[in-house]
Length: 145
Ligand SMILES: [Zn+2]
Ligand SMILES: [Zn+2]
Image 1: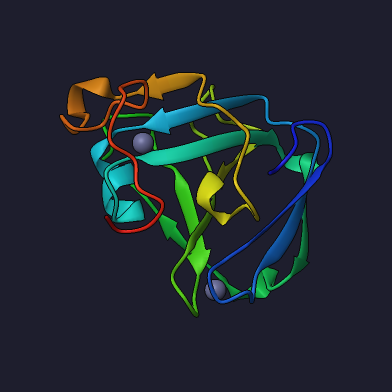
Image 2 (image 1 turned 135 degrees about the vertical axis):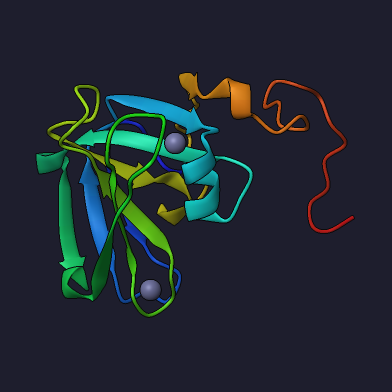
């Protein structure tokens, strides 16, 4: 389990990019916007907002590639950064958004262990997949069925 009060470590899938996060996130957001879905290749994106100085790269920062997102109906132009080896989304910044400026959005799936950071906000619920409801009781399986 990750802890809200300690250092958390994260990495991309191949391990080239490794980082630490000092302290707990300022806020936690599930984003259902179209671009976060495309970018993650999944049904929504679970975003952790940290101050930029809470993030320290341990390795692989030069392996990051950047995609200047545009045409979002969301918050201007997020700069999405991913591993050029394995393709994991790692972080996003957005200097055009008052909400994001000065912060770094960390993709929660890259944290080591099971995150204890519960989502606080959900954005773009108008584009939310019908089956996504984190509060709904579902049949849960340890693995695939
Ligand atoms: Zn990688
Ligand atoms: Zn989004």
